[in-house]
Length: 394
Image (cartoon, rainbow, N blue to C red):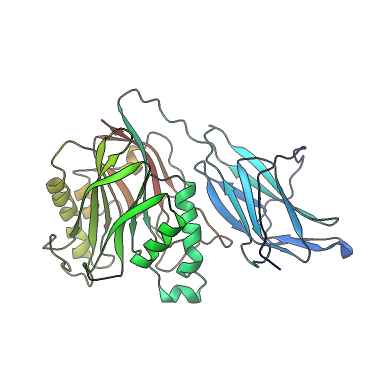
């Protein structure tokens, strides 16, 4: 059978009056010879920013799909056994929760109902001063590890959900870590509206891990760019202190095309293990930002810093920049933690180790840790992205 993909954005003529129980998973509905039907999830809780989620529909007959709301739409691939139903929910700009019902039905047989509850958006203060809005994020996308193939989390499985997350949340600019050139090329193929600059941790001849800056081409352009290492010699390709591999920061001076306003953007990855390398990396970040930013422009510094907020290296950085987690003018959204154990893609995240840091030329209008998932609760990376709506003062 040829692959069939059905995208539906249809209003129900009659809104469903009652919902099925929402705390069950893999419920099966049977009606004699009319067919069987099961869905892996019966309720989805979506943040106000919107998301793409994946559900497995199992049936021995063809199914039809109807969404009760135009802001919640679906794509179904009946040739795929798992995660064959893609549910995309648009951003909720209302300051209240909204609910949609998705009906999955076997013709003349059973039906299942998936309830989608989306949180309301926190009220963002009116801004009267001059400046630009930028939606920025920090996202460690996890390198293409061979070990992940055996757990079903290989890059080929993750890349499309990860690209969908970037697109659906409408980021203007993202600081990424770990992705190699092949991974970044895959993302650009899936996200033609974006471009990126990146530099490999181990230097110009390496094709492995990069710290990259992904940006929306219609909105932003690169004016200048550079790289430095977290080591005793930050201007040269080098391993620092007690670390066992190179760690870097890729930076760019960006221009907002519509207004000409410029700002600096940094994407960093600190060493993960030994204390001395992490401890000194905070001082290097402060030193290099002060060297690079010689004018009074907004600064956004993103990264997987492998450090809790109370560590000396983060406290060093906070002498120059501020943590968007603390500055947000509306309630924070999502879990506090951002990182799982290496190669773990589901469950409850651990510490808050990923950051969006800003200088005093920026207001933080919202802060969210995003939990988009696929394949029954798996995340596209072993880190959750940190997303911020920012206002960059002129």
